[in-house]
Image 1 (cartoon, rainbow, N blue to C red):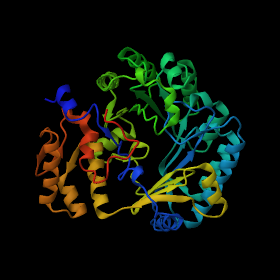
Image 2 (image 1 turned 90 degrees about the horizontal axis):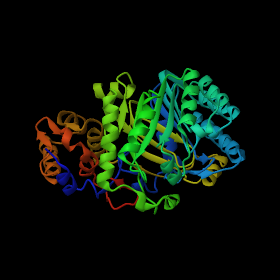
Image 3 (image 1 turned 180 degrees about the horizontal axis):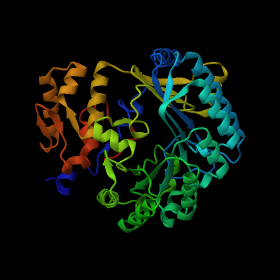
Image 4 (image 1 turned 30 degrees about the horizontal axis):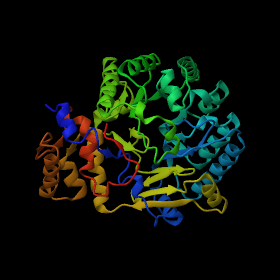
Length: 451
């Protein structure tokens, strides 16, 4: 049995590790991947295949202090209108290079605040997407919705365009915590947004909440979870707040002395986790919960759960194309990231070029280690037969890697000829265990607490 003393000894409470939504992680991207490479990778997509599409909207009416995403504030819709025009031009460029018959398996609008767009902007953007590629059968169109920035007209425009999954950010319903993180959002306001979403006929609802926030207690997170459960979300992401004020300057407004200790963070997570489990949600990976009928739960049960920049996913497309400033694309060949600033991105698109500014081309070892890490993060296990079959690594070398990882964690893992398995009591260490298979320099800034 792994107790808290052993968890502490193994680094759970003080280690800084990636969230492993990619491998290698974004801090390791570099030059050498530019617009030409990005174009070539797009053109290599198989005809009549499927891809996922992500559109990044970096604008917010107000900037939440806790957020570490690349966003910018705006008091008017003028820059948003111009940016939508840039996205439409970018979609036209994409259409020129996409092979024949390619369809969209997933479409996601993130940010920032995508619901800052007016209904007309939304309608024009959706039309441009549909001119670029048709939706596949059973395609999913999801949008991140800020309850502070949504109304019936905008929801109707999204639903008419095919949105069938909405994702609302909650963080925490406690007023003191909201004031401290710069995110005022009352329960009644959120409830109204959920009711509007349901009224449009949108089939699925996601919600995000945070643990590890300033002034957060077990009683407060219990109240937040219970209020959230009253909405009956299909899927919940329970993320740990990452306090990185050296990277996200606005987080300097959050008092660090009000943050819970690492041990208290674990208690907050466990409190919320138990509440979701008691309400019959399935535990998905390290930080998601879903109803039994949700796609994530089905993917986990059938061994198809995957990990991407949005976290856990049931999307099986091999290609994710990111459009907009700072967006990241993933291809079988590697990662490609757009210019991070809105002005630089817009400038490139106006010149008739994609704005790809950096990325990473996969080596064979990258592909092997990426799959090992993804299997750990998704399944808490690595199937040795799958790895030796798909990557050609000798069984003996793979077993050596497993035994070395196990030794780092005082042999709490189960290792045998079938592979590696993390027992339930060791799963708080999952990201640390994944890190043991990471071959890159781990001193890069931006990594967060292991819990």
